Image (cartoon, rainbow, N blue to C red; front, side):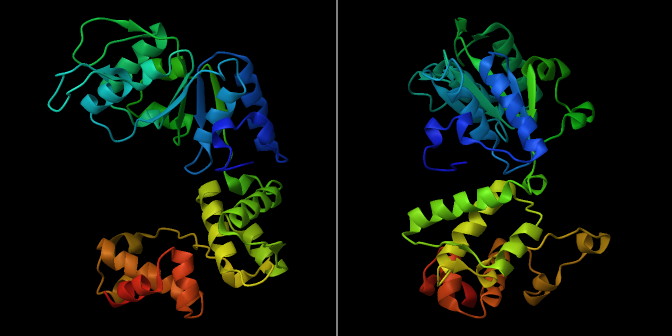
Length: 323
């Protein structure tokens, strides 16, 4: 599957799944592309929910119309109103011009609302009316506007968690005409070789390198990893590995895999060993310094390779180590 290049014209033909969970996901996605039902995509962070939504849109009868993506998390009701439905001039301080919202911009096409379960109750009520009747009001206006919009939504919460949350049942039933579950990468063992090859090829093109593949030990480490960050983590690991590789094959020393930590009662109350080195400091600066040191240790103290892996200059690396 292409990740960055060709994102805007990505279709379901670009997806290939060998694992049962991914095959089921793609079957549902192809069905979604043949209908105009509202779609709810479930999946952990980093699994590619926005990309799948775009691929469904580009494979549907609405493909020539706009695909408008919007993240609903952590917005106040005023900002949510303005972002979704637009505002009139003078609707609030700083509103100097009339602005169209995402819903209006998606007229004839698809509106993708990411992290919909994180919307406020007021925001949920407003989007429910827009989804149900295609009606909305710009902030500061008393006139109704109408738009023909197919709504796709996504959340990292499982459906079962909605029962104990503030997420409205009526909104859930309205947006989940079809529910598609994107499996985490740890459940896609048979897909992993193809995904790795795709990411190595993309990183080669971006960095002007010609890495051919993986050493056996490196491949074994990658296949044994649980990938808590899913596709986002995979892309980061491969980008760094291609940058660090000296030959035609990626070796195990070029893999900057973060260990998966399991929280214990003791860890919640006390700083970890790395934090103790900085006097137990929990500041962002201390956390950054610990991360830089960890990368340097993993690369055998090679500052040039560590700077390349971190995406910073050698002088910046030295400055962060001394701070």
